[in-house]
Length: 187
Image 1 (cartoon, helix red, strand yellow):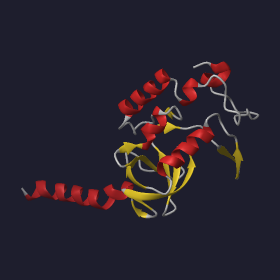
Image 2 (cartoon, rainbow, N blue to C red):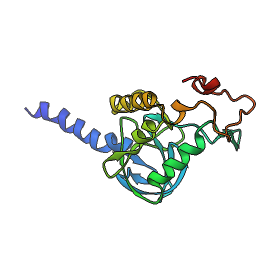
Image 3 (cartoon, helix red, strand yellow):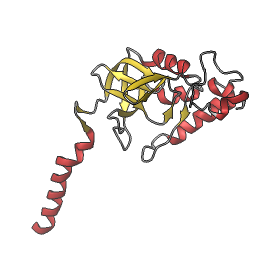
Image 4 (tube, rainbow, N blue to C red):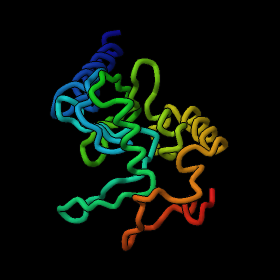
C-alpha cells in the first residue's frame, strides 16, 4: 500500500509545485477581477496593474502594428469603431477575467474572456460586427457562442458586415490588404 501511495504523493507534490506555474506571471497570480485603466484597441486593454489583456476568441481590426522597434498607425477599416466601442464597454470599469487553456501569448499579454457583470465583452464586440471570431487551439471554450454571435451580426449586417462603403478614416496603406469582405461593398 505504501508503494502505491508514494507515487501519488509525489505526483500531487509535483502538481502543487509546478502545475500552477501556468497560473502565475511575473506579477503574481492571475487576476480574476481587475479594473481596466486603458483601452488599447478593439481587442486589447491595459489593467490598472499595468498588465495587458488580449481578448480571447476575437480579432478586431488593428489601429497600428509594430514595424521593427516602432509602432506605425495603419487604421484598418472599423478599427476606430471597435476601439471606441470597447472603450465604452470597459474603460474605467471593474471586469471579470476568465481564462482558457493558455493564459499568456508570446508577447506576455494575458489571454482572457472579459466580462462586465454577466456580459462577455468579447462576444458583444463580435455581435456588433466590430470583430471577427478567432479561434486558436487550445483556447476553444466559447467557440459555439462566439460563432453564433458572429452569424447574427452577419445576418443583421451589423458593423463591418453591413459596410457598403468603407469608413472615411480607412485608407489603404502600402502593403496593407483590405479584407475581401470590405472591398467593393462585398459581404
